[in-house]
Image (cartoon, rainbow, N blue to C red):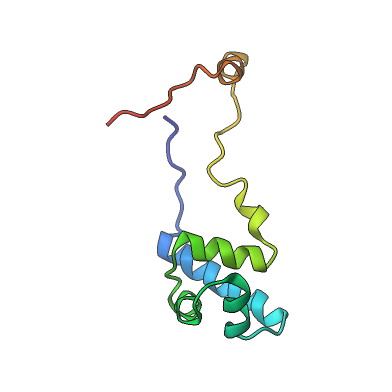
Length: 103
């Protein structure tokens, strides 16, 4: 198992950053919170809470990303690391990797 990278950003800090960026993109389009929420198919109160606190469901964040034309940026999230050797590459191509983790 690969070691986690050291980061100074906490999950709550990242949530705030995403909310701030969402607000910035909304304002660049000159949309109100109501407009963005309606286009995303989420409640205004849920979107407002996201902008204010950074707290939101993943589904809400993805819907907001979709209407802000940023959904494809999530595509690289959680991709496995690139193979470090020919053996690893062959194993991944053969599908012989582990399917379940340990407890």
